[in-house]
Image (cartoon, rainbow, N blue to C red; front, side):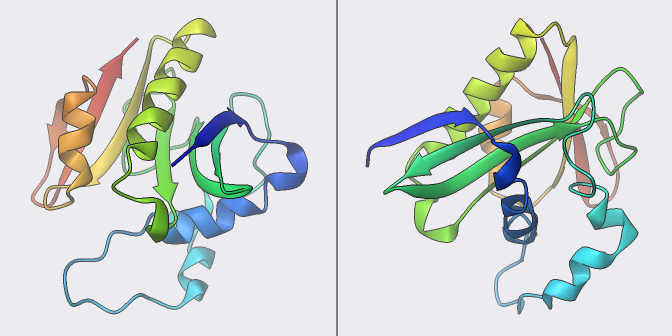
Length: 156
C-alpha cells in the first residue's frame, strides 16, 4: 500500500482524539471502553491543547486519509523520564496495522526529533503489547519497568 508521511496541520489536530482512542491497548477478548475514557486526566493530557511549544506530530496518509499518527509532548505521563525528554505516542487505525506504516512513522519521527536537536524520547508500553518488539527493533531500551509496563528510552 502506498502512503506518505508529513507533519500534521493545525486543522487536523482533532484527529489526535481518534488516534488516542485507537492507541488504547486491549488484551485479547477485552471489550473496548467508551470514548468517555478520553476525558480522564491521565489520558486527555496526551492531546489537550495540542500545538504548544514542544508538541510534534507526523501523520501517515494512505488512500487519501489519515491512517496513523505519531506525536510527542513534554508531559508527566506513564512514560515520563525527565523534563528534557518528550513522551511519544503512536497509533494507527486497525485497517492499516501490520503493513509497516507504524515502523515507518516511528523511524521518520526519530529522525525528525534528532534533526530538531532532541536528545531522546520515551514511551510506555504494556509488557504484553505486541508493539514492544517494534520499539525494541527501533533501538528503544528498557529504562525502567514495573509489574505491567516498560518505560522505554531511545537516545537520539
